[in-house]
Length: 288
Image (cartoon, rainbow, N blue to C red; front, side, top):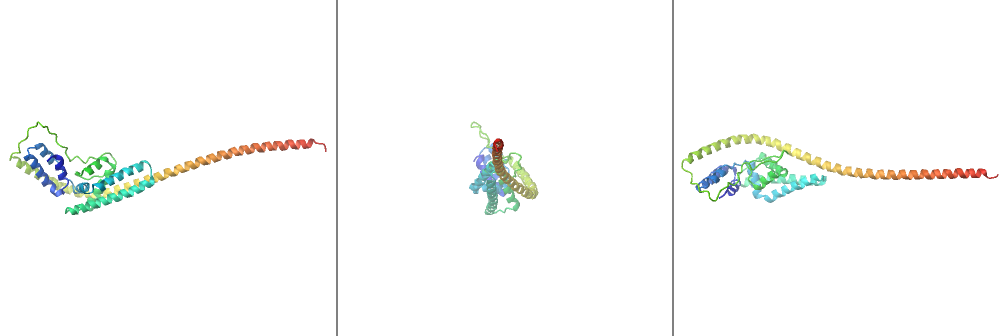
């Protein structure tokens, strides 16, 4: 067993099983004499329920998840090119994909004997929306090892790997460490008690966060919808402006042509007037 395998295992099970399974993996690493690995596994953070749902999507619906991320790339390109029709179409596809995946996450929870609240679904949707805007979030979502959900505020990359330690460096010449002595059992019990306390406190904080998440989700969806509408309007206005500019150039060309014709007509008129005057003089000089 290595850290990658332990991480994949832990973040693929339900949050309620996480603590006990992590303790088992830590014990296995210690019995194998690898205390460095045991420490790294022990530092893996328990995922929130909503983060676990996203991790389930990464394992069960990887194709649909990648299709959503591809939509985000296409939408970014359409916005860069100010293509109103493409922005509208891709925005509708994106919203449908996010809704479908958040619904699928709730179904996966039920398959695992768990229930997903509306707040859980909203947090899943927020994280998927953030993955469309932030490559770092997209990478974490694909990996399926999230410890928490997130939302994107447009203020730079988001780090969701903070709770996932990297593989510990080892040396081939490093001597094996002896298994832990019985005295460590008390330390393990104290760690477990501390973890249980932290879980209780986290549950309270999470309940408070659910209310805030609901409000934030509504605000984020409204802001995203408004941004898409404005981008589409801007694309339409840019197209209209191009048409008006073209019409203005053609009108100026016609006006210039008309002015040239007017000058030519005035010159011809002056010549004919001169001819008439000279002819009248000639007629006046003839004998009666």
